Length: 145
Picture (tube, rainbow, N blue to C red):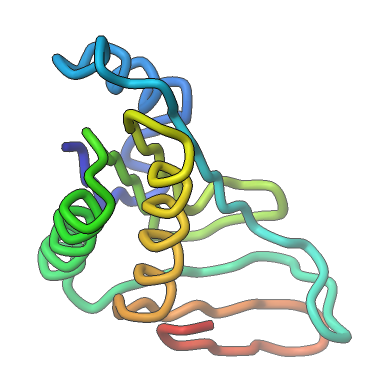
């Protein structure tokens, strides 16, 4: 399992990196699906043209631990082989990647279901603060935004 919460300027992990890691997993011979998700910065919001987005979390280690629990629960619930997650924090611009998830499973159904659950649970249950900055002002969204 790979779960990382990374400062945007610290390091860059790509979806290709996550997929390559999953393909080296010992259960690859029993796998028939990899599903991925790349969440990116949207440049247009309600009546706003985004100039930049600042994403923070109060405690990076706690956030990582919470995401690890979400991943473990999804692996058990959907009986998938492996799940990798990278969530970036820091300053971002339109098109920048924020959130990567890759799931390795035996069959497409449960693999896709596990992917969806990880995405939605991280979005709504993990403490992040998102500040959308534009010429029209700043909009702040807490977990669940």
